[in-house]
Every structure is written in structure tokens, then in C-alpha cells.
Length: 224
Length: 193
Image (cartoon, rainbow over all chains, first blue to last red):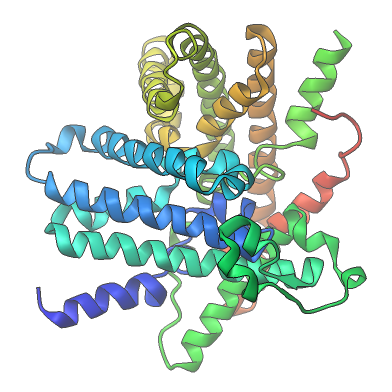
């Protein structure tokens, strides 16, 4: 594959075709695990690892998987990768694992990995498939961190609180307090805030695309 | 009996699967453009959630716990759910062809609905008995169907509203969902679960 193709994969994954803001896939962790920027970041990274690994495996075995049974095979591959991440996080990042809890095994039924396997990895050789999974996953991480940051700043006035506890002591530097503690709007941390912030950020991405002179992506609108 | 009633109200309304636990959002956004399809999806999902949590309970108790295979839970549960969906599809086709026609393409999609796996995993965490876990699963899925139908009704009205172009489609739907979630927060305090 030519270099420009790799560039497109990276750009599509991170921004142009962002899993959350453009395709509106994988909404469940996107709302549930974004009460703080740190949670969103951790959830996004776990998903990125699963996506990169399962895209690579599906691309390796793409000629052996028959079309009739492909969906169960994909789900099983994703489930195996999720189990690996689940056990690994439990062992090495236990604090973060306790916060994310239920939503780590639920990566299995996140539609974003499955959508990329079906749309991309099943037709490509392993290297581009791996990169597509990785950068789609990183785009997902960016989206979750952004939603988490907005909700955390408005809701509790901090940014990346508890990062040193959840991600490791070296992350102490990014912990910030932007607003006094009593100014937080609790609604943003509670469930309604998740829906409203996500809706407004989708509008934000449309505005930025519009300012850059691109066509607004209404793709999600037709599917919905 | 009172505990059962409180638990079921808690599962259906207070800790609603969609609006409080954020499970099954893909179908919540995807198939709520019309009330009748939303109701069909709710019905089918209710059936699958109830059947698969009964099966998952048995698998967890007699297979995974009994032989210390807890680490295989995710893989096993997704297989059980996929088979439950397949079983549901075959049963409905045999018993009521007209209902099968109505649900059609939505049936296979239930496998990747995270509400199904989510409820099954919540039950394992809660360590409930067979009867109470089945009741919990049924009540949760009734709450799911309720919200699906309400939201579909809202969106049918939304189509007729003049929404700014930037907000058209998903963004305005999210904001309306946020308002619905606020309304459902009014139930908190009725029962805890």
C-alpha cells in the first residue's frame, strides 16, 4: 500500500470519519464512562487495544473465514481479545479496572470494533488493518476524553482528577482544578449531561468541518 | 413479595437500562424513528433478555462457578446470547409467522445489543438467585421497551419541528434524550436496587 493510503487511514480514524462524532457508533461507553476525562481516556485506550488486535487477527485469517459464519467468528475473536484486556487490566491497572468495571467486558458488544472488522479488516492485508483498528481506536479515545473533559470541567471543576491514582504516579502533572469546587453543575456528571454534551460536541465537529470548508457529514442522520 | 415489587420498579424505572445505565444506546438511536418498529424491537429484546439471562444464570452457576472457569465468562455469555437469539428467531417463525414478518431484520441485531450482555453481567455481579434474577431481567427489559416507545413517539414529533441545520439528525435526538433522562431522574428515590 502506498504511503498516502496510510495517511488517509490515520486521518479518517482520528478525525474525518471519527467513530463517535461522525459515525455515531459505540455510544454506550461513550456516555457511561465519561464522567471524567481520565475515565474516558482509560476506556478509549482499552477499546483501541482490542480493536487493533482483533483487526490484525481478522485480516490474517480473512481468507479462511467463510462469509456464512463470519459474524460469530468476529464476535469470538473480539471476545477473546476483550478477555485478554480484561484480565491484563485487572492485574496491572486494578484501580482503573474497578472504575470501568462492567464496561470492559461490554467492549464485545460495542458496535465500533465489529463495524470496522466488517467494513475494513475483512478485505485488507494485516498491516493496514492493524493501523485502521489502532487509529479508529485512538479516535474513539480522543472523543471519549473530549466528552469526559467537558463534563468534568462543568460538572466538578477539575480536569484529569485522580489520573495519578488510575493511570500511574507519573500522570500526577496533568491533574488540574479549573473552577472552585462549589461551582460544579452536578447535572453534567449525571446521565442527562452525557447525552447533552455528546449532542453539542457533534454540532461542534460539524461547525469545525464547516469552517474548514468541508461538507458537513450528515451520514449518521440517514442511518438514524 | 414487597422486596420483589421494589426491585422490579427499581430495575425498570429508577435504574433504567437506557437512561441511567447507558446500555443498548445503538438500538435506542437506531430503531426509534417509528413507534411500531420501536415497540417490535422492545418486544423481541424483552424476550431475548429474559431467556438469555435464565440460560446465563444456569451456565454461570453450574458450569463457570462449578469448574472455576470465571475467566471464560465474556466468551461463553456472548455464545449463549447468540444461541438465544437464534432460538428466539426459530420459535417465533414456527409459532407466529406474522410476528416474525413484523420483527424480521431486527431479530439478528439483538446479539450485538449491549443491553442483553449488560443485564447478564449485572446479574452475575449481583449474585442473585434464579427467581429474582429472572424477575430483574424481565423488569429491566420492560423498562428498556418503555423508553424505546416513548423516545420513538418524541422523534415522530421531532421530524415535523424546524431544527437548525447544524443540529439536524443525531445532535437534536441526543439533546431530547438528555431531557428524557432528566425526566426519568424524577423516579429516583421511589426504590433502590
